[in-house]
Image (cartoon, rainbow, N blue to C red; front, side, top):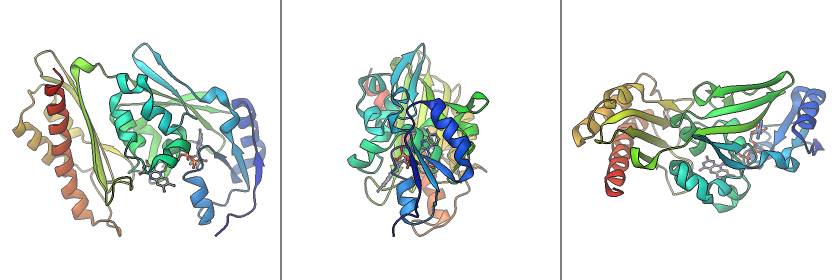
Length: 294
Ligand SMILES: Cc1cc2nc3c(=O)[nH]c(=O)nc-3n(C[C@H](O)[C@H](O)[C@H](O)COP(=O)(O)OP(=O)(O)OC[C@H]3O[C@@H](n4cnc5c(N)ncnc54)[C@H](O)[C@@H]3O)c2cc1C
């Protein structure tokens, strides 16, 4: 199918984009990489009357380090993040997670802002941003506001962005390599397909290898990525062993927040079972890689 007819605008500043969002009203949509929106338009699941293409807003395309954060412009391509030496050094879990997104041509076009606003609960960057406590900077008619990843995703394919707002920047805490164990694991029908279930784990450790803080985000188990809070609480203050990892994985799968639906990819029961398997696998991988890197 072809999309319905639309007007097309190419602002070159954030201010211009915001003015267009105001003047075009509810029926206007931002387009960034187009990798989700165009598919939805072709299926007529989205019928915007106006497209506001932000690809000319060069100020939204950057990656830099500020104190203990990576600061990323919303228009930065997934592929740029995947190969960035700065991202690989300061936040390797993000670079790794991105390798699981679709295929190269998609990552060359898709943007960090687009995948966050699209808010697919099995998408790699949303899941990782929840594990990392990323912050989203949003520009609107009355100025800027900042939301934590945990507040940003409202439900399936719905973020907290209002129709007259633009996601402009994402801030992600950097991970100190000597005291951080991490992993990103998922299960999908084929490598590159959207995950059925995915788990991002980040363990902050002290010098004796005791877990100070655990952050575990699970995707594909609820309408948004969710944190495995009970498992995180269990791991905090503990030495990492196989048995505590198994206990944490059981807690993750039993969490009230793990409430998956059945669909044609997998039943709810299978997703729940995979939550335990992947949390256990992910924590083991994080710990093994950390130990191996010393
Ligand atoms: C075949 C295929 C396979 C894929 N596989 C995966 C996968 O395995 N994992 C995965 O995570 N993703 C996958 N994707 C999706 C891909 O990551 C998309 O690039 C991403 O979801 C959307 O990014 P985009 O920049 O293309 O956004 P667009 O499609 O341009 O926009 C998506 C939505 O975000 C809004 N938007 C975009 N930017 C902004 C902004 N700055 N402020 C406010 N609103 C904004 C748009 O209005 C739209 O509603 C796949 C896509 C395809 C086509």
